[in-house]
Length: 330
Image 1 (tube, rainbow, N blue to C red):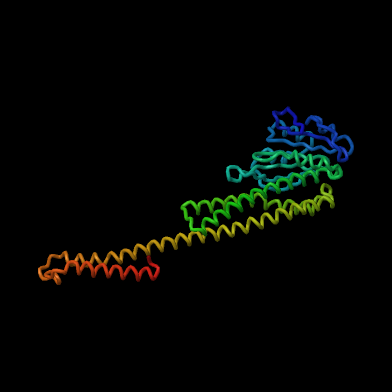
Image 2: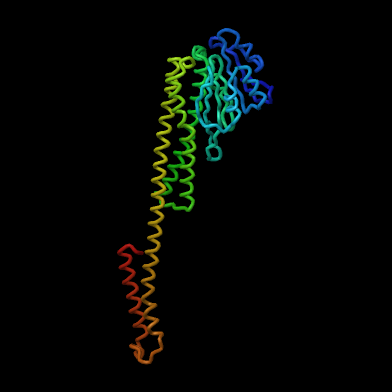
């Protein structure tokens, strides 16, 4: 993959195509001139461009100033907006970093004869998407709508490994819960996983509205045969969101089960303590009575009074222990 060395690496590639066939790399300043050629399509990829490069982009593609203003900020919600003859699409990318979901953004300009991607934050290069489309010129000939589909499908596909990792983590937590490995941090791990799932859902769910609009509207940019591809992305996201919702419901149930098990464990501990307390109460009462120093106490004058008292106390303790053991208190 050829990358431009100008603009401090912000321009990843800028390639011209004619009827689906790659014509070669061009400079950003040559975009307007290249678009004057008939049946020419340009794919430009940028990474965190500065203000000067965005202004050049606006002039070369004749983009709306509000769209450029949105592309300048890396904190946009996923959306699709139309500015004149072009579309501005924002999608959130997701990567798993140190067992946490890190979000980035990809801004896309979809025009009649150009496709521009602007990446912000954590994301993977879309060079492989471009190369795959280049290997099928008949698909690349469909232009910007097909290129946009390729990038959107790639972003959505990268959600699935993250979801799978979260499913594996949930299964491990579930195993710990039902095997009695109770830890104070278990409930915190469950809550953290639920929050991570919500982050992933918030990134994926808006894609449903974006693809739905692309399937129904904008016929000048999205032809009927390309809409089938967007329907495929829509189906993938629908299944992913449904799976996320199911796992979040199971997480809620797991949190309740974990709390219930902890409560049961605490109740059993209290019950055992109460049982031992009852057993210890017998010698405590007996020895307290005989320690009151009264002159006329029963059995004080008998030679076997002391061992008899100890034996009776021991028998009473053993009997109570066996009864409590029988009822599951010990």
